[in-house]
Length: 299
Length: 286
Ligand code: SF4
Ligand code: SF4
Ligand code: SF4
Ligand code: SF4
Image 1 (tube, helix red, strand yellow):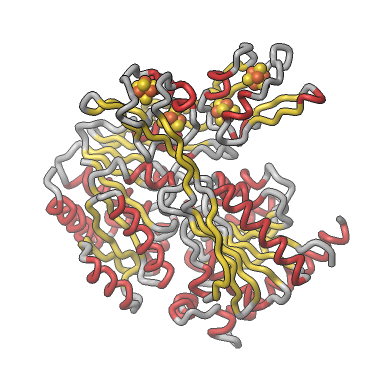
Image 2 (image 1 turned 60 degrees about the vertical axis):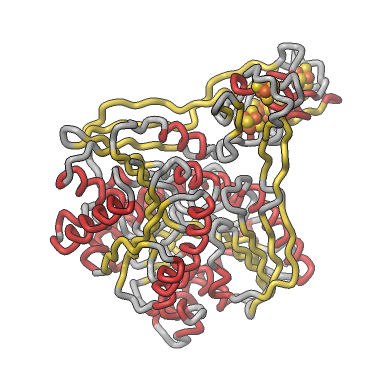
């Protein structure tokens, strides 16, 4: 196989069991590099228990600040800032660090050169190994932005790692939502698994997710988790997806052993190797592999 | 008073809690209440709260366009753009703004000396007001699909809060920029978690963020009943108020899946919600 096949697991909102499902696949596959691109809360490590051998910092953004001694209080910066980040308090111009996007316009404009822009490197990328293979994951500094770029960088490293060990797959636990980081995780990937729950909000989130991925050519397959919590809803979701030509990869029943496996730091496939859920995951994984071969033969 | 309801991760019951609290406050307390759905990527409060639509406002930013006829390819705009949104290839006479990466900061048009940059409005989302009962209001911020400027839509949504009301913010999950945009504007933060290792891990990140912002906070444990002691040990260690625990029942999950307001259906839950509100109010006088 040439270039590794990249699978991204997404869920719209998160909390749908995305990470436990990603981990279950991890236990079934071989020759795979894993990434956790849920950079806000990289939970996959709780199950994979990776051992970090290297880490590096990653630019997280920039913030402006005003040198009080130089500022004459002309007010130009406040007038120009489009993010309402500059205000006057006690006759002093100050910048709200949480509102500032670091665009640099104020620093450029200030006639007294009183404004400095400082870059931050609060984001980190970790390189690790776990019992299923290499893991690369990121951690966003608190209140930091640029998670989209962090996600792209993690994926880039995953590809490099995959090349060096001749891996066939990259499996990514994707970021929640449909914004910048989620978009960055889908761009140029080969297949998206969308995990949903049979709830009205699950269905709404899934629709927005499918709309977002529709901008790319990446095909989407859906897993309905805890489908038996509302079988009518699951049925409706299935039918609507079918009519839109989107395939269901599988349905997983509600089962507390998913949580007990997690508490022991195991994937469900390790926790109950002969369980029904494990059978279900094996079926899905085999399906996936045939989809991958089909897709590659077309390509 | 402004209360942000948030969680380290989605799916912990944050929206159930904020819509439930809103409903209970409306029915059983005497405040003027506003609920703001600030989870603009996936706004879900509307599934539970059915109000009468009263107004709608677009959220837009100014996106620059560059006129190649006027451009002299001096590169000043490209150099200042902190978001690398300008692509310039002077050799082939090409210059363009990549809309997806542009934050609409206006720096490029400020530095251009040749009047080559013209700005146009581009819609990135919308804010909709709904009346709820007689005196209360539900406001939803919604980001357009494919846009990546969630923080901007959130900030504008927050600007719609009435200073005199008791305001509930349904915050996005996580600890990054969009969450901080909400939490930094709140007087009190309710963190929702669940008794699992994921829940605990996410709660720790959330607690760190909230403490860094210097906010008062309390915790609601959702889906309580699962034996997971380390969560409770952590809450005790950190000396954070446990505002309440919402038990897990399959019926609740089913009612939720249909978009029903849980505390309205079940007296035990109603009591729990009322107690949560009372504990928050005790922590901070309104
Ligand atoms: S533009 Fe410069 S001098 Fe004028 S108020 Fe801002 S920081 Fe002060
Ligand atoms: S850097 Fe940009 S966002 Fe920050 S204060 Fe200056 S003008 Fe405003
Ligand atoms: S408006 Fe700001 S972000 Fe957009 S292209 Fe111009 S400089 Fe870059
Ligand atoms: S600053 Fe103006 S003239 Fe210079 S490259 Fe940009 S658009 Fe062209």
